[in-house]
Amino acid sequence: MNAVVRHSGRRGATPPAIPDRFDLVIVHYHLRPGGIRRVIELATPYLVQHFKGRIQRVIIATGEADDAAWNKRFKSLLNGVPLEIRSEAAFGYLSEQKLPVATVRRRLRVAFARLLATDEKQNWVVWAHNLGIARNLLLTRELIRACADSRATLVAHHHDWWFDNRWIRWPELRRSGFRTLNGIAGSLFPPLANLHHVAINQCDARILERHFSGHAGWLPNLTERVAFPAKSQQRAAREWLGRKLGDPDAPVWILPCRLLRRKNVAEALLLARWLRPEAWLVTTGGVSSSDEVAYAKSLAAAVRRHRWRLCLGILRDAGTSAPSVAELLSASEAVMLTSIQEGFGLPFLEAAAAGRPLIARKLPNVAPDLEQFGFRFPQYYDELLVSPVLFDWSAERLRQTEAFRAWKAGLPREGRLHAGKPLLLTASEHEAVPFSRLTLTAQLEVLAQPVEHSWGVCASLNPFLDVWKKRASNGRLKTTAWPEKSSRWLSGPAYARRFAEIVGRPALAAKNSTAGRAAQVQFIHERLDTRNLFPLLWSRDS
Image 1 (tube, rainbow, N blue to C red):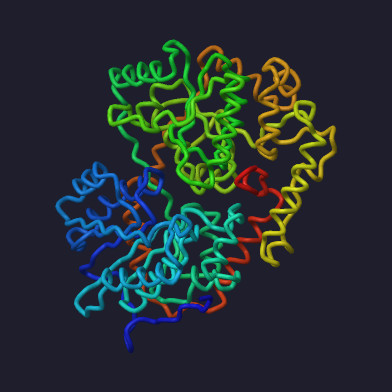
Image 2 (image 1 turned 90 degrees about the vertical axis):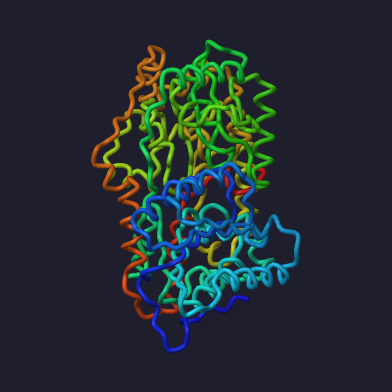
């Protein structure tokens, strides 16, 4: 199971650069609403346009494709190019499948044999999303094997990584047969001439390019600067929000996200309560993964108990008459993004496109790209510091000590050797600590304090907040201009050109067989550094 896939294509043949005529095969675990589906929806029409008749068919191979309305709309965007959507349950998250591993592997092999049937006259470019998150490494291995056998060009488009604060899934990987780090690296980064790795931020792309020179690239997500919703649409969205919240006159601040631990929702609520206590904070999406259920339940229970002005998942089960996210953004007074981890950070750009003020954490792997695109964010912060008098410091230290010990014990040996030490465990009980470095239990203790008290002890720790509070109370939070230079990075045509440049590079000799291991080691060392350790992500119950 851990062997490196070593296929080199049809016997005696060299994988070509991008062929004159080909099928574009898009592979993803599912077509649920979210960032990756949105990238597929936005980018594919531009790829069809860029290749000007060279794409014979677009085929989506996925574990589930239940949104008939989206499927129909996507087909209409392809300018007459035929679309096939092939749904096979074995393509989905392995953790959500009940079948034995051997059965899943067999079904995958059969599905890919049909999808990429060996034919000297047929060519494929396979665009596979998020293989690096390793939600189904059996899928990854069989896809790479099939692409090697058929000489298909494979673009592994990495949005997230399994080793990026997702170590709680290490036992799942072992149960599926991938029992060593080297085995996983061999499946994600095999030495194939027809495989290109693509990252959505430069931080990750630099590591890939260091180890896979000529086989790696940077492809930032495209973003359409859609037409600003009409006044009537904004008014309708605002009225809809008022009805849903039962409070038609209150200002609304919006956190456009699904309910995930990494979105750090409690921090957004704390900021909203400090800066605009009369405002409602709403998140757009609900829970979309079993890993997030415990977090969502704990947060929702606290909201009910304290009657906080927070509405979780306002678009969940809202029906087709609900406003779009863009309309909700335009109808909100401010947009928030308090994530502790993002691969790209689309809400940064969505807020600018909607002309709404944004309050956001400055993420170190995303900020340099946003600056290069030309964006400047007036309400941008590194960390939100809180005084230890607002939570039970001794209990939190004990909680984190035990949780970190359990989390670290679950790492592979190499991970244990390189794991840093959590920030709170190196601080004294008198030091202010970043709110993001607390467990949810401690975060909720801070939120349970009267707003006037918590603001009184924390305002001086975060001098920027006083200015923001004055702006918010006057309705004068600053917006971010949409820079003209961003089109060279974020437009649809620019995206298609970069994609074509990556897949059109001449095929090189197979990569060094140790490059994948070295790349994964570098990624893991960075991700286990103290600056990247967040208690919220150590356990499903954090």
